[in-house]
Image (cartoon, rainbow, N blue to C red):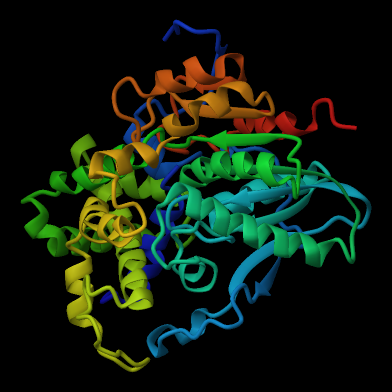
Length: 431
């Protein structure tokens, strides 16, 4: 990206924090103390420190590398992405293991995965943390096609990685059971991975928890794409809006150089943003992460979406004009102009609308309804759900769904009550 290192650091902080009565039997939440009721503010700011769970500041969280496709030869521009990078924190005694799957564009060591890892390690679990299939390193090293977003293919790619890690780990540690969770897109992925495991039985997952997953992947990315329309002056003013954000963040940063939840809250207060401007902020953050995915996939496959087909870019290539293009492309553009045409050859009889239906939890609703080991935590005011979509979780999961009244998209993941429920989901009834 054509962004200074300083601006990257500031905006990385933002990207890390992008997380009534019902007609069905649902685990209702009363006297909920999460302090931020505005869904956009919650999504951007997360959980203020005074409300967070008491977790260890550090755990033996170590990076590991895995060569998933040894025969793969990457284009020179992305030569560094041959091996998948993941993280693990292992107990010194026999213990259950939990796999964590990150959300859209997020890495294995992003803030939310690290926070979950601390919670589960404290509770006595071996922890393996995986990047989202939409994270560029996963695309280059572990995606079988290089074009992600296909629910079943992404699940197969994740499952392959998990099996390889399992084979490595069982040589050195004792694992008493396997468990799985993920947030946002990672929660969506976890549902499909669980279904795949029920067929292949490599893990026989004991418990699976979906945290703030989308119902329809297409609907959610469309909502996020539309948020860039709230940029003052419209999308044509993207660069100016981004520059203004960096300047405002910089002003607060001079007074507090810790880029975390409290910093973002101070920045939000100092900038005095309206809801539509906060939506634009979230949309811009999503656009930046999706731009990296789109360009990486295009280079991987030589599809000709952004980079001309057949043009070879080496590691020293000037990418300025490509950055300018991908920053103007939404995820829905990727779906219609890249993803769908790429997979159309494999599914010649499927229309665009059928593809959209296929990349949703409704496609596996019967499985989710019948699989009692799968539970869900969600928020009534999540910004990635279309009106009425929250009822899918009430109807399908019933008492296995916990719906919080507030929290936006993953904003309350670090809140002490949420962390307590997240951990107890896997510890209650454990042998």
